Length: 83
Image 1: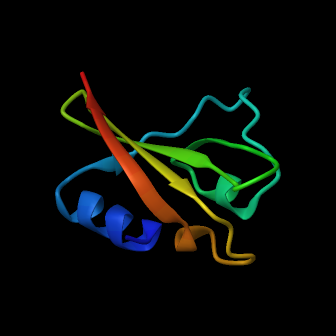
Image 2: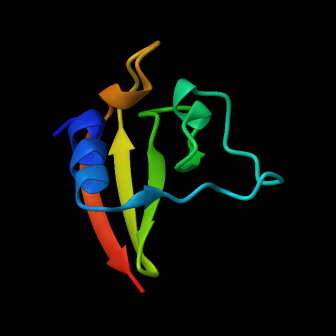
Image 3: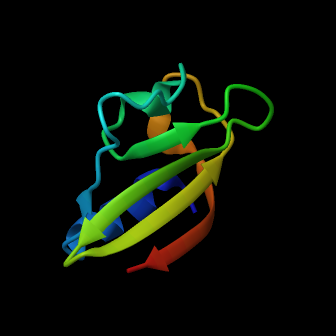
């Protein structure tokens, strides 16, 4: 599933982007422009992780593959829930 679809479903379920602290470096990829992007690998498959929060529950979404100019085009391979 593409990241755009996962993000849309999370937002419709009441989750909100969980921005990384302003002093944490994400990377140079287009995905790092999204507020919920936790980090992105700069080489290889372009792995990125994204975080959302609802009622203190955090969802971390992991994607890979880069579509230049389309940060929402990554393929999602893992969704994890944490307290």
